[in-house]
Length: 86
Image (cartoon, rainbow, N blue to C red):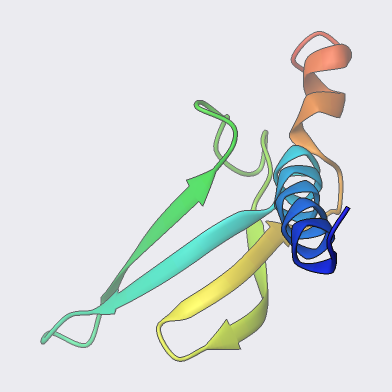
């Protein structure tokens, strides 16, 4: 297998595992009023809000973009395996 193909496969698997573990891609839009909107893209379609569900904490910021994980480092699928208890 060529090196470039291995790099692509590793990148895709890294993104998939990051998503399964509850990772989110965040875009922050600053508003003129001083407030902001956070747009999060996660693998999970529906999650209960904090404190029942995962609250997300950014761990890598790059301007208006960030990577985030649940603050308690507990992947959302663990809550589902426990019958929806987070």
